[in-house]
Length: 189
Image (cartoon, rainbow, N blue to C red; front, side, top):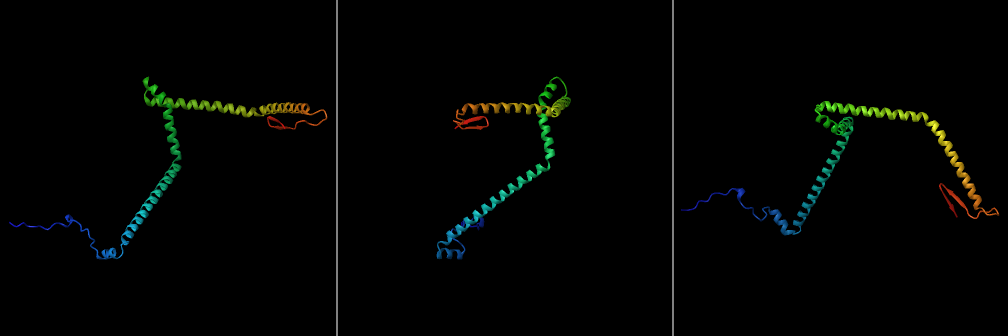
């Protein structure tokens, strides 16, 4: 019985290793460096493609960073309120958890903790404000005392300087050493 052969679909056939295009074949036989030129242009095109993709991704990152900074700038009041409330929650958590242990509801404990914290901050603000106002009203009296103390110190320093000069000078009136007074140090040269 003869074997029947059926046509094989084109997708299952092996590709022909020889180029089908006769113009390419003639180029390869006429100029052997043409194949390397094609490879070189392909690698150049690939490098250009990679560089453009990299530049595009850098540009996207820059635009995203600018957008995030702009969004933060526009929402700064919301951010401050949210971050302050988070800080307040972390600070008041130990007190609230202790109040929950003694059978006070969590909401009431949180309200009590916030009220206590606001009272404490208000009291400290009032205390330090009054101290600052008292200091500002009495600063003229303190400045007069400070000026008189500095004047006395300067007079004593001048007396010490004069006595040092009198000890260093020779009997003929010429100085054996030349003194230089530089802030808190005395140099003899």
